[in-house]
Amino acid sequence: MASARLLILLALLSGCQAQADVPSRDVEARAGAGDTRLIVRAGRGQVAPGIPAEQQAEAKARCGIRYLDGLGDVIRPEEREQHERLSAYASEYNRLMLSHCPPSR
Image (tube, rainbow, N blue to C red; front, side, top):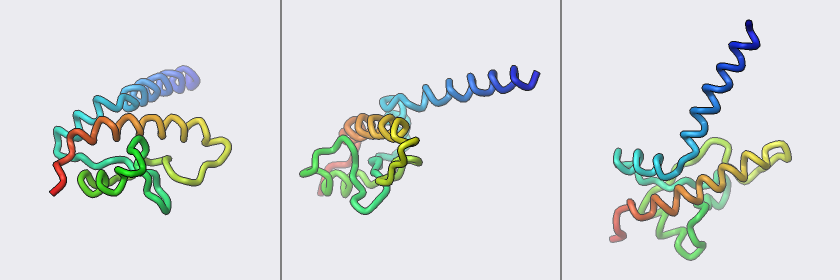
C-alpha cells in the first residue's frame, strides 16, 4: 500500500516538473506579471546562459537577474545531468525573455 502511494506521488511530482520545464510558458507567465528578470548562474560571474558574452552586461542591466535553484558554477559528478538540463532551460528562457525586457535608456 505504501509503495502504491509512493508511485502515485512520484507520478504527480514528475508531471509538475515536466510542466515547469517549458520555458515559453514560464516566460509568458512571468513577463505577464511584470517580472522580466533573466536567470543567471550562481557564482562569481553571474553568467546569463543563452545571452552572448558581448550582450551580458546590457541584458542584465535592462532585465534584472534572478537565480534558479540548482544552477551554479560548482557541479558535482552526480549533479551533471540536472545541471545540463537546468542550463538548457535557462538558455531558452533567457533568449525568450530578452524580448520582454524594457528598452535600454
